[in-house]
Image 1 (tube, rainbow, N blue to C red):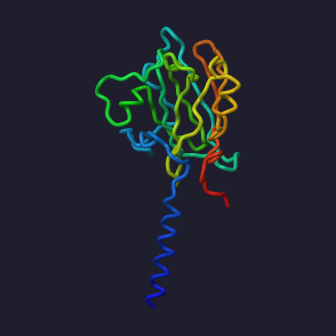
Image 2: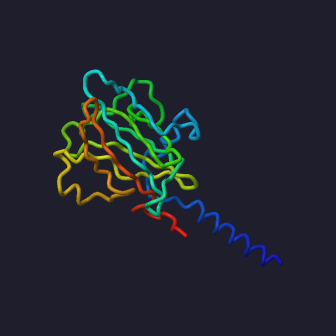
Length: 208
């Protein structure tokens, strides 16, 4: 009887370890997805990031649909965390930041896909880091129901001269391609990116 109990405990622990296994590999700063004061369930599907204005430079709007791992079923209730540099290539700060805001700055936001898997955010177009050769980008972290948070490929801009053929060839396409084409629609710029959960994500659970 004792041996049977021991075996059951071992199997139970193994199952616990399997359930707690994280997907996506190391993800520095991904825990920032939990720093918002608004509960996940109350997040909107459309947000306006800080410093957005229709006066002066035109803002940038990016929208898309998040799909489940089958590549065709819309995924509702997926949390997206975004942050990026300002028009000078810096992560701007106000001086009272806490947590990951000390590094990510205040140009950041959280949203949740709607029942159709749709999301949209409006922000300013970021600039590359000063003196660097990395293309301008928008960081994104994903948190889907039942799975830990993980990062996917950054939003990149197809017209960025720093996004060379060599850099394109090295992209991992986590969540699908993050390269977007910007279109001038008059009062703003627009881009579109669909996201595919689990695509090229290490240790992502197999679909049954």
